[in-house]
Amino acid sequence: MLLTDNGVTTEVSNKGTGMQRALAMSIIQVYSEITNAENSKQLFFFVDEPETFLHPLAQDKLIEAFEKISKNSQVFITTHSPYLLKKYKSSNHFIKIFSSTGNKVTHGNAMNLFPFSPTWGEINYYAFGVCSVEFHNELFGYLQEKYNRTQLEKLLESDTPGNQLRKKINKLTNENAFDEYLVEKGFAQNIKYIRIQSDGKTCEQMKTLPMFIRNIIHHPENEHNKYIEEQLAQSTRKMIEIITN
Image (tube, rainbow, N blue to C red):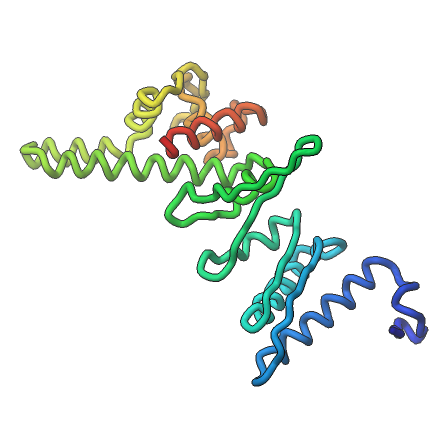
């Protein structure tokens, strides 16, 4: 196949890998536009790491092209790119995770922590072993929402008078109540968090690891606190245990 670039025509095999990938993506996109025509023959596409040398935005366009092709054909993709996987749809996509240790190859499909699984953070964690801020936020938010809902149901079923009921419901939004719940679930409340008060002064508070990290994530303007990657990983693992149990 010949390719003309800047007025010079050469064999595609003589072009750089990036140009070859760009050409392949263009062909796939063109094919995706015509593949839905009547009487189109079903094909099987096996594509190995299509994201190589592609900008994340180009990867978005590529997976959209594969999505069109998959309406009439079967597409198999091996990838290490979270940008491709973030387009996952449980209704018509299937993910299989493979890993190897020595000569042993294992596979699994464990991305079902949430009713809305898999999330991008979840995919990054299980497929690539990446502990992300996004996944920590998802775990924390999911646990907090479940805790709040359970406590609210208990309060509404009780005979608590109206004024006291309102006070108890308002307490549910207080981070201390949820932090106490995390203590009940096995976290130690042993990390010092330095909070900036409304008057600009600081105060020290003891928090669990998830709450400590959550506060740092949600308040980047507060530069008095820092966490390390191992703490993020530890907090993530423990919250997964709470959800799965």
